Image (cartoon, rainbow, N blue to C red; front, side):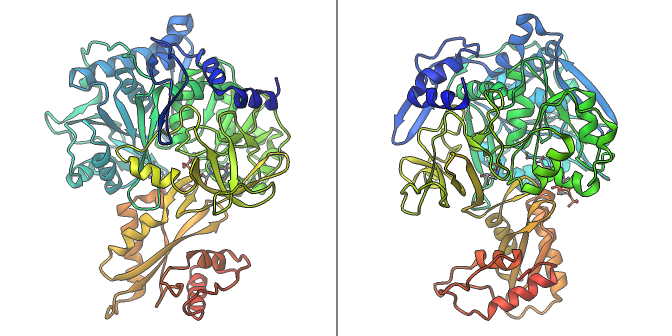
Length: 630
Ligand code: COA
Ligand code: AMP
């Protein structure tokens, strides 16, 4: 069957399509049906099936006689170490940690925050939670204590599993002070922490509250996998929205298992036993779906890579890992290749390595610019597949179904909608637009298995963010079009979300931080185009009357404030003081116009602008920061 037939088979009978896909999963009790319509635009999948994620990701492979197969390869150029863990070893590790957690009172439904760098123990921690039916929430290491505190207050975890430090090129980041800082700020107080001590920074542990990773597990009785309902939350992953309060995306257990397993062959074209590598971080959705769960559920070997595309030690790292571990499918963000290209435009490093085992390269997380795709394709001689998805969906909305039938690549398009997704382009009034017209990208409800059924403790926000604008649809927050061949083109966000080096951030959240500076009366943060990171945040602040300190002092404080409140990952380094912000006569800040000036795109001065002269001041401020192309 080709792509069109598969898509058609889903469209004509989604129930049968997903029940068939569900056959690849081990159920303790099979679901009686696939879709459960809960009314009022809420849906669940496989809700009355009983199943355990860890069983499907680990134990069943051991039971099938594949215990000696490598499950995880930890390749850490940043520490100069490598290790391998077989499925049988992974079973022991997860069962032991789960047993120790159980003995400390962690049960089905309890939340556990995981704050760890790219070490295999991060995967073990996720799986140990899954084993018990506990709901994990992994927090990316590049976030500051304040962001961790926000997540602790929302998820209300019983425990935090962490490492003593993360390692960035040139610096070690001790995590314990960040955890202690978060716990001092948070209203909710987790009962205990379990800390993996890394030699680069040993954490101080408080008696009875902080436990050493290994001592905690000594003598623990291994825990069995607990079957949970298909609709039980497997995890919560926070992602940026319009405000500083992150949205807790809920991932349901049954649909997650079925959908991820389906993608491993149909999208990524790997068979069980083959090596799959997603060079991302467990703190992001790509890390959840394609470093941890997807490859393991499907019986692949997954690489946990602790390093950067460049500088650890050089721009040949990706190629080395691909050759050394015989990677078949490789997945990363376009920004990573832009970094490699900048350092090694002619691909000198690539010449040292044999990539003959590699089948294809997959890009996602941000718009893949044609230059980067063409450069990567030409240099490696491999197909480069852009694919589009979001934290909310957990896997591909549109991609190239390489394992079904590779479709011709149109550079700049992530190709076509995957089965399960009925993608439409709508105008402001919610009417469908014809091929080639730009509009809001929406997906007809129900969304497929594994996608978010709601936001954690925030159903109203879920409806408001995704369902209310276009009744009967899920609003993706992206704008774009569909061409006459059904290929999708993703052009921009329709909200205040920006994408910095493949990391999703909220400009609204940064504005909230800047507004808290005592000298700032008003502010705006926009995302401007950047050759390496895709976008960079840039702040404009208007000062409170009477403040006459040097502007450079105030902007330096603003930069520091965002780093301390949100984290280094925000990459907020551009900030300027201006007298006023451009606004409409009704007082709305004209952020889009500011972005257009910065990026040098053609634009008309909005008719509703209060005072066009302010744009000159913005242009000057942008120039002083090295921007403003018009
Ligand atoms: N813990 C602590 N700090 C972190 C961190 C972590 N886990 N990850 C990043 N940071 C810090 C960095 O050290 C940097 O700090 P600095 O301002 O002191 O230099 C800052 O956050 C920004 O980090 P990053 O975006 O990684 O920028 P970079 O300049 O260090 O590297 C790239 C640029 C392009 C090489 C890098 O962004 C990259 O590899 N991107 C790929 C992203 C990716 O895989 N995304 C996942 C989606 S698929
Ligand atoms: P995240 O939730 O962090 O995965 O970010 C999701 C957002 O990143 C999407 O809504 C898009 O704005 C953007 N994005 C992800 N993949 C692509 C892609 N292939 N092309 C264009 N934008 C993308």
